[in-house]
Image (cartoon, rainbow, N blue to C red; front, top):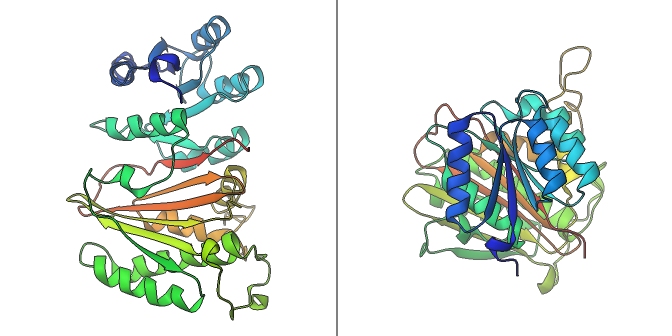
Length: 311
């Protein structure tokens, strides 16, 4: 297992206060941290000091973040990458998809250091699964299993009623139905999305195929994690479908407005405070959602997709 002191991180950020804050946070976790004030300096540092992770702002002088990412991808394949922005990540979705960026952190005020530490630790250690990582330590986490399609609606209703006092229960039920349906039919059953009317509904999943549903709440938030053993989602596929729901066509409407497949994750992301997807290709997929009990105002949604290297 990688130890933080053996893991080198480069931070490229033109704002000196943010740059110093990020470096201080990660150095306190034991990581070796290098800093650059613009993309050009970051390129020079990478040539001298190969790093395991690059954290970069988007808008920087001399060389912007996406140009830096493209250069790093060519010269340092396999390096983990996190993008920082104070703006809406959806505005950059074309470039995010083009560069295959799975993780975008929003530079909120105050800055969420807990989010940064968790994400960096997950990427560095490859220990990415588990709702417990996102709730206060000691929080009780309960679980259920789904083996039949008929159980999807029942569990979604019961969970939305259980946690509906702090959330819109109808919206929560719709989100859970969407995620559970994807997990059962795509993750476990490997159905094709083009014609859902052809899906078989009269089945019972084997025990080792059952969908695991974890849920819990702490003082601040409510969390759900839906886990399937297929691991069929991929970062590139998720970014493709998200981008189709954002990119405008010639008539100004999203190019994927009438897609029969792929809209679900976009709808879920828009409906919850936080959606995170963790994939061990061919083995496991976790769709994790977080809703905060108090409204989160003035903060854009992060993008969190972590895909482990294929074994």
